[in-house]
Length: 211
Image (cartoon, one colour):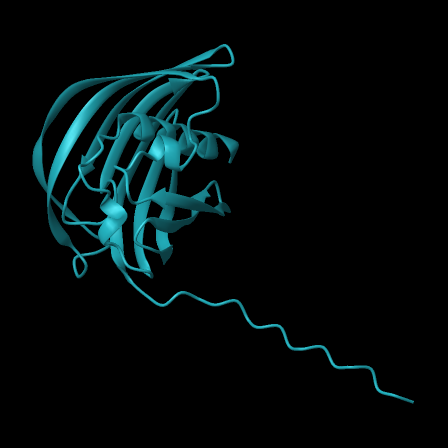
């Protein structure tokens, strides 16, 4: 399962490089408890892996939002949980995922060249009962990254909308990495707001009985 994790990491790096910052940070209108779940589909040399990635707003002030990232990968009869990661988003600045998530490795040389852009109406959801139509804008990029003597190239297309308080609603990436043909798709399948689970309170320790 190392290759799906590698492909997911590369996909998020390229999304970070190709993201077109909006005038207003997309998380600025979010509320604590808002969550966004994406379906992930990965193909590596024709072998498919499915998974989900969820972003949850765990805390928010006028200047900062805290986002928890969690998820899982399913494939080859195994389930791998993606470790929970916390992001701090500066709401006073346009959203820059390369800075917010630290996805770009130190010393890496990166290049993103926009190819095309346009608008499209997307209908996204987990099933027909949850489908929702979004008016989106999209951009396509040719991506290049050089790090530690290795070169990566990718074709990337990202869709985003002002109708959702999240940086993107869909992404498609294809790349050749270390002899593997990698294709990754992510799209929003569920969004909403729910109370956050609180950690159970620790019972106070009893004082030792006097003999």
